[in-house]
Amino acid sequence: MRSWWWNVSLQDYAHTVNSAEPIVSARGIRMAFAGVEVLKGVDIDLFPGEVHGLIGENGAGKSTLGKLIAGIYRPTAGTISIGGVARSLGSPRQAMELGVALIHQEPLTFPDLDVAENIFVGRQPTKGMKRVDWAAMRTRAGELLSSLGVALDPKAKVSGLSVADQQMVELAAALSQDAKVLILDETTASLTPKEVAELFVIVRKLRDQGCAIAFVSHRLDEIFQICDRITVLRDGDKVGERLPSECGVPDIIRMMVGRELASERFTPAEHSQGKVMLELKGLCQGKIFSDVSFNVRKGEIVGMAGLVGAGRTDVARAIFGITHKTGGAVFIDGVEVNARNPQDAMKHGFALVPEDRQHHGLLMPISICENACLAVLRGMTKTALIDRKAIRARSQEYVGKLRIALRDVDQSVRDLSGGNQQKVVLSKWLMTEPKVLILDEPTRGVDVGAKAEVHRLMRELADGGLAILMISSDLQEVLTVSERILVLREGRLVRTFEPGEATQETIMLAATGQEAHAL
Image (cartoon, rainbow, N blue to C red; front, side, top):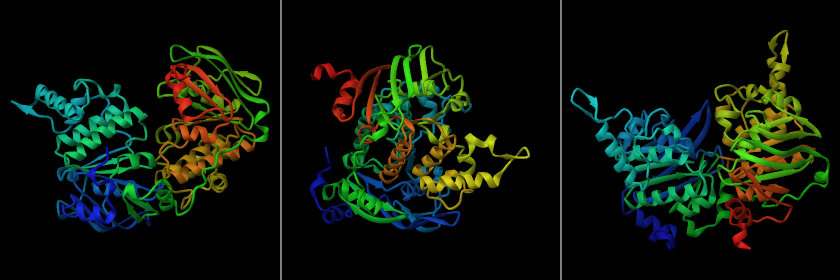
């Protein structure tokens, strides 16, 4: 249910919320990294009892703004007031002491500690000779989790929890310190639709209890579903503030990107009925997946859908030699291959862009050019030393091809937006000149503009003769980009949709096993 102000105008809404004092008020916020300004005089207020959406393309500055309010960065100019007092935040701890907590996209938990220890890390209750009062800590942890409506065992090791449950642990930790401002930075990026719905129940509950919540996201449907007010950033500038009732998705997209985005559906290329490049026959891996058979043709994009845990990523990892199949066969260009490891798979013409680009696709501390050339580094040596001139030249070539936005190929890859980081991962694998490209969640964590760019690249690569297998949890993406769609459920291929046959509803019915009941 929407807040009572859902049908009022922005002017009336502003008058209403301005009768209360904002918990956080930021004015003229500027922030520069290595001389490049990423925020250019942004103003924002966070009011109690409000979910305030922050949206913009990757690189627009929304996460940076959240981190400034949370004390991770210090602004190069401007002021941040908390509780009506201007503050110079020197650390996240100082911000937390003032009631401001940041919940990251990837939970920052200690996997080897239990739930209660994570909630009270560094603040464990003690008794007697400063010994940890385990009973009191676990009792209080249980109370906090119950207040969120979460059924977690305080003694459970965090390493065994899902991302969604780890986020609940972080929320409980914030509430244990009386947080009144919560900044949720892309917290839904790794969650299933069911987990998102459960998180939103908690967000609304906290809002109704008087918390000020900043919801940073690139998912427009979620922004309109949960937010009471929306601020749009573009290239470090605040370009507007809207109520959801006063605008629609196309309006927000225009504000975000400064242009219209075509919502075309790709049509199969003429050569998509060419020869089979990848074929699986009865592929199995223990109890994880079994009897998976399909093919991908030259110039074709085949989408693979299914719920989390259906076995999609496991199939990709087995094809690429990260894990070993226990049965069945894999063929590339008509020849059976048995990749024992990723290096072996690369020799046969496979490339895999993993789901988690920051941990499995890139080496964050090193440069863009070094990351881009990692897979072909052995062939870029000169008298047994790495030929840096060749690395820079080769990476520059792909910067142009993939339209990567950067200052210089020698800058750290961590400085790039999510969409541009994904293009660096793509360039790394394209340099190997693969025959089959497997993309696992290729647009996870990127905005609508970057997503359109990645889709364009995929179509161009397929038109150039590459066979592409795309795994995605975004059903609209699967429908938009794919020519054929495979649906996995509980480790089995349960349905193949030919071009034009699938809808979001029919895919979900197949993925959940409800297809027969809908007939």
